[in-house]
Amino acid sequence: MRVPPDLHKAIHEAARKGERTFNAEIISRLAQSFEGDSTDAGVRLALKTLADTIQALGEEAETMAQVIEAMAAITERAASYVSDEAVKLDVQRAANLARVLTNADTRRSFNVVQEELLKLAKGADPDAPAPDGRNRASGERDLGR
Image (cartoon, rainbow, N blue to C red; front, side, top):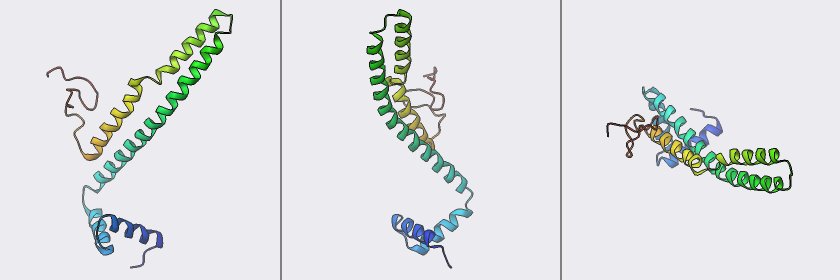
């Protein structure tokens, strides 16, 4: 069987990672394509990719939070030289709004979302109560506990 060079290389790499021979890797992947749950595996992979993306955004959010905080402080300092009280109040409101993006709850949300997506990617039931009694999907607390 002739295989394009890029695909040939990818199969060899996958075989090496899976500790299989080249032929065993091809047979495994071919057999998997006929299984009914191959779609499930693709969806799980998409969920894992989404979780990884959320993690990366969360890491970037931390840097953005530091930049926002610095910019808010600089803006407030500059506003102290303004004589118009309405402008000062607008600057304070704007700084407070920007700081909403930097608070710990917002940053924790990235972690919670990522954890839940990873559970979904592994096949965990999102509607099952989490250890803290909250519904995994909605975040609401189960009052029956």
